[in-house]
Amino acid sequence: MEERTGSRAMNLRLTVYAALFTALIITGGYISIPLPVGPVPIVLADFFVMAAGLFLGFKWGLASVALYLSLGVLGLPVFAGGRAGLAVLFGPTGGYLFGYLLLAAAVGFLAGRGRPSIARHLVALVTGNLLLYGAGVPWLKAVTNLGWAGAISAGLIPFLPGSIIKIAVAVILARAFLPRFKERLVSVE
Image (cartoon, rainbow, N blue to C red; front, side, top):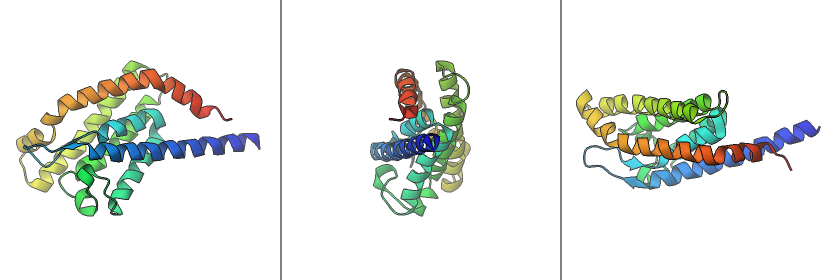
């Protein structure tokens, strides 16, 4: 009986943390800087997706992003710039939104394997970002009828410096807070 109570408390905590990361992803989407070169803005949402994968792992990080996307599809203004709906999900930025699922899944899966380390976190975050842009850039190309050069210059190049900074900050935060977060997560009071 005690084990089931501990499991329920753990699931409750993870549910609350997943909802918290969903709120952070939404907030990160509101911090949006439009670019003159294309329809994809610079946002902080991807940083919080990375953090969800690092801190919550594969299953709960993915749940957090799925909740975010579901809220946007239902019409809540959670996407970049307060937009919502299927038109956004299937518009020029839709590939990046679907890519958030890949980003959270890859980071959660790869960072959660083995012993935590800076190298493991870097590999997870870089792989996740490659998947994010691997989904976003071709989608942007297809939806906007840009050529590859146009899609890369509008949907990848301007974001690389920010992605490098976000990855570095995510590694620093994981190094500083992840051990204590995991310890607190499993302690049932």
